[in-house]
Length: 200
Ligand SMILES: Cc1cc2nc3c(=O)[nH]c(=O)nc-3n(C[C@H](O)[C@H](O)[C@H](O)COP(=O)(O)O)c2cc1C
Image 1 (cartoon, rainbow, N blue to C red):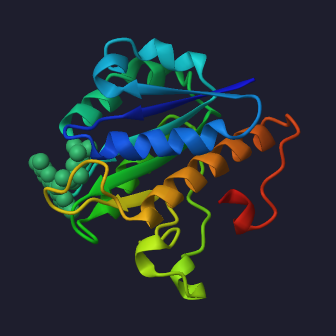
Image 2: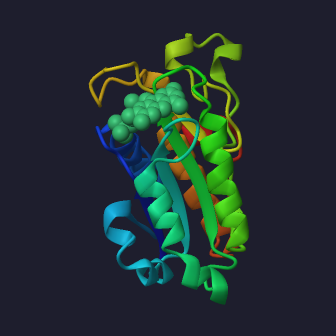
C-alpha cells in the first residue's frame, strides 16, 4: 500500500474542487491510499508528512505565486529540510487561477523549487493537449498546456464547481499518473499507462 497526501489551500473552494478530482484519479490505482490535507492543519504538525510516500501540492495562484497560507506550510517544513527527512519522496503540484495565464507557471515553479530543496523527485503532468486532436478546447485534457504541473482555470467569481470539463478530466489523469509513477518508482509492480487514453 502506498500513501499519498494531497496538501492544498483553498480560500473559496476552487482549488479544493480540483483536489477532489486529483484524489479520484490517484485513488483509482490499486493499493493506493490518498488523503486530502488542508495546509492550515498540516502546518501545525509537519512531521505528519513522514507518514506518506508522495505529496501532491495544490495552491491557488495569488499575485503570481502560492497563497500566503500555502507559504506558511512550506516554511513550517524547515526542520524537515535541515534533516532531509523528505529526501526521495515523490511530489507534484497543481494550481488554480482565474486568468488564462495569470502567472500560474510561477506558482508551479515555487512548488518545484521547494520540493527540490527537500530532495524530492518531481513528477510533472504527462498529458498531451487534446485540442490538437480535435477535442473541443473546453473539454480537452491539458487544454492549458502545462507539463511542469497541472493548471486549472476558474472563471472570475465563478462557482467553485464550474470548471470546464477538460480541467476536471486533466485533474483525474494527473492524479492517476502520479499514483502510477509512485508505484513504478517504488518497484511495486504498477506500470505506467501505455498511452494517454489509458489515463483518462
Ligand atoms: C489575493 C489574490 C491574488 C490573486 N492573484 C491572481 C493571479 O496572480 N493570477 C490569476 O489568474 N488569478 C489570481 N487570483 C484569482 C484566484 O487565483 C482564483 O480566484 C482562484 O480560483 C482562487 O482559488 P480558491 O477558490 O481555491 O481560493 C487572485 C485572487 C486573490 C484573492
